[in-house]
Image (cartoon, rainbow, N blue to C red; front, side, top):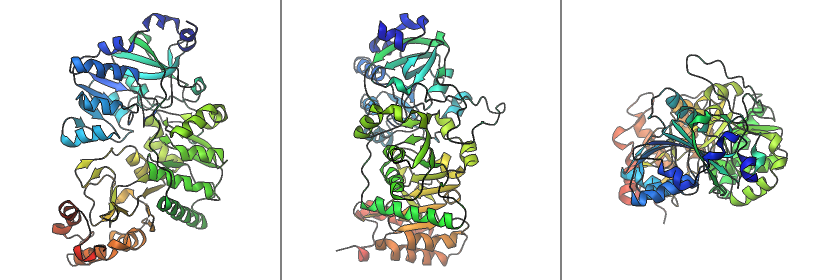
Length: 504
């Protein structure tokens, strides 16, 4: 009872404690669920598993809305049980990915700042149950989130019912680092009063209608660790190229050694490039990002970063143990916000962010594909990269120049799927070098991208394509019948290289 009173401080809710199985029994076929969770952090764990268990005997399909990807293999489990009708706005599970590409269920790939607007405007299906992970409920009925906020606030505001999972494995020291701000309906809202990453503009928890809380489930389970891969030789070189570019910006008077607030997308490459700042001269840095990965905490430990604002804390297993066993040392240097605020175009533009995100492939004019392998197969989703790239001071995309031992070039004549147009891409970085595309016309970009960023295996092939395209003329010259020939050659022969150019 002591634990209950400590975690559920609103006495009106003490009689609503139920098992995960009972909570799952309320969910019916065809319902829409809003689940807390963002990039494997702060996701609900017990009720989804109980629902999947129930689906073994009583099959059902539900719409699943989240902040981003879920941990604890929830996406995997739901896909395996064929429980999904529609999923949005982001996922990162191999089984889920396979189902999406097979057409087993629908996936809405969405800018992460947009989901809340669609819910607020009643564009999407009404949420029947918002299921939120929390560390506590305050005396006033305010829900205190755990390691992410994501879309939890807007889910709870617009859902018919709320289920809360109190996760006692999450440190109570998280209380106080959240900053929940509601912008209000479009057409009626005021400017968001935030001008620096450390500004606190909201309240410490989600104020919910207590009457909508149907049940509270207790659980004890840590977040799933991130799948970050340690920096390798190529990503270390990429980081050095990025640092060289930033130094040039300082020389030109466009930046100081404090740079500008930094954002880094989820993933091993972006994290590794961010990690390269440890060995740089830059200090007194600020981070305004959707996710804080291992590298940000390394920078905090090293005194390089003075403050970090995010929507989610997503860490590897070892870093998770280190951070949360010493969380008191970080509390006054962190804030967690809803994803519509962490990714809000108004704020990204106002603060002048330096945005670093990962590309799957890019083309000779600077268009970027972040989502689709060979133009058709969904990988994870666009996530927040579009929110940041289009509105940042510097929209930087990083990628290795080749994949699959050189059988794939990450730089192609024309990307097979466009997520970020040439108009939103400022700088490209590979292990070969960087290309600053700002102020360049399409024909000026081509040589910079080929010579500075493409792998030597493919430079001649890219130049040959471009020279042939020039004969046809145009603002962005292309040979339409050959624009995707590299992709079709890979599908047919297992390589993008022309036969004569293939290595021995």
